[in-house]
Length: 102
Image (cartoon, rainbow, N blue to C red; front, side):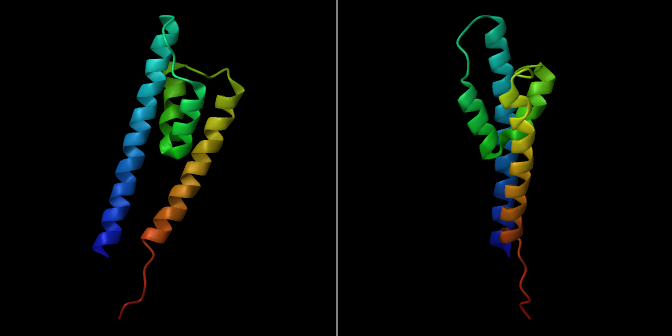
């Protein structure tokens, strides 16, 4: 049981840090766009949202008001948030599945 709890904790830490990372990427890309500098590719932003950072990307979109006019983001990010939640739910149920060990 301790291993399962540790594994679940690792999953939570991963979700936390990937979302912080993606939020920061949105801010960095916004600053780069304003200064006409090198940009982070949309593909990279979408992939990082798909692997767990969709909430960070959604918050970053609203906080920095960045990529909000692009359909692939204003439709895609909410879908990826739901996708991330479902995947997290499935994984966490499998990790924390209890058996009757009497």
